[in-house]
Amino acid sequence: MVNFLIFGPPGSGKGTQSVRLAKKFNLMHLSTGDMLRAEIAAGTGLGKRMSSIMSKGELVPDEVVIEMIAAKIDSTRDKAGFLFDGFPRTVAQTEALGRMLSAREMKIDSMLVLDVDHDELVKRLILRAEQSGRPDDKDPAVIENRIDVYKAKTEPIIEYCRERGLYEPVNGVGTIDDIFERLSGLIKKYV
Image (cartoon, rainbow, N blue to C red):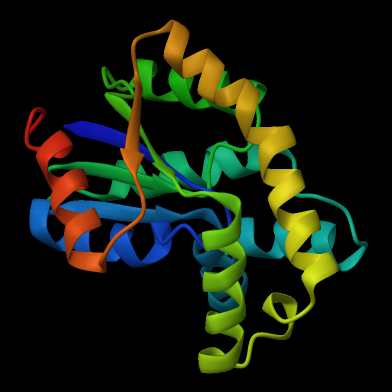
């Protein structure tokens, strides 16, 4: 199995691209936010634990998120690999993910990072707010904060992956199809 991390700042298009890439290459798209919501909605034991944590306004601990991902990996049999979207968010999570995958004789094969300049990100987020009604994408101060948080939390992960030969920068500007072709070209090296 092949495993990819897909990263990009808010508005870079990683969610859009992840869905398309997962379908084309028979990868399981793992969005931890979607997975958390699904576990809670299904009322699983893990979901109940996470709901209790989140209802107190606390962050779900790394080990719980890793447990959730491990369960998804263990129950997935018909995919060529996994595409991790929005996770890991810290170097500690990256290391924990690596250990969990190693225990299953798997590894992170590549970190695909969508590079998009600041002005383009802001323009995309405002457009997304107009099209989808997402209020968090309308406020310039909120947009700037989200981009700053991404830079602060992600740069160490990028460096961690660069040191291990996993980092693959991808030009994230152009049409959705152009960016998809660039990403597909990189993934084809592994599948």
